[in-house]
Image (cartoon, rainbow, N blue to C red):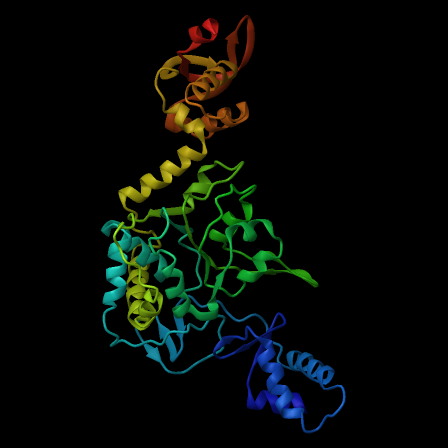
Length: 416
């Protein structure tokens, strides 16, 4: 009877053991416990804490609800619901994510925010950021990208994360890419989140990348684990926004799929004579309603382009640079004087690897495995116009190798 009475006063739903109001998920259940205590404190004198705990558990049972629908055609804002067809209503319904910002179509242009971005990024990269922040307003992973902002430090790029917190509220999570990939409980923290921000990315190479790649492109439910709870399946739609002094790399994954999921923007250098404003974040957050409309412009542009982001030539080159620096096999294959791609040529895998090791020695680089070299050639056979074969004859033996490539540095091996 108490729970029925309480839910009439404070309507809620319980999804997977977590309480929701029309304003979104209840992050701090201590607040609900305090409300229960206020109701029963005059009736109980002993075992109050246990009684409150039992009533909270009973409340969750009575408020049970199946998972709430994932709605990509609307944005639940603080003062109602904005539909992507351009209509707005002040009515509120239960939802996975309700933003902290209010929809105000008459909000002034965020001039301070735009000036901040012009100092931070080259003009060609600002539309990319605008589209990505707009992309984070709806629960969709169809863009299949994560965004990295890389700089030397002190540029103010992490202010973007604070501004997004003022817009998204509890629908944003701040943690690290390393934790999401390596901690089995870390992925559950992204449930019902629109955005994950890593404001100081660890430069250590990821030992594995399968979870990161799966979340960026998630289209079906994934396995979730919480401490003390049986694992279950749930749909994740959190996007990644990372700030750091270097790019995200992996120990073993140099595949195109890993780098294809990244957008890498580089910031302008911080002027040596610039006086930093310690209150910049607060001033930017005062423009949150205008920034929300600015992000909406980016979302509409992204949707009109079928979830394809506007990527500048510099941003494309950034990804290629990261790819080459983390996989020196690519640098070797693009080098001169060691190998030559020629239609009527052939080379054994062993000879290619010897040429690669010589290139690494000449360029003071650590050689990767022979399998990595062969795999890179096989995966990009159309790019390099080569063909893997086991019919290469070397020293009277038939061995594995590639057609369409010639080793030029053989004499160097004999000399050394």
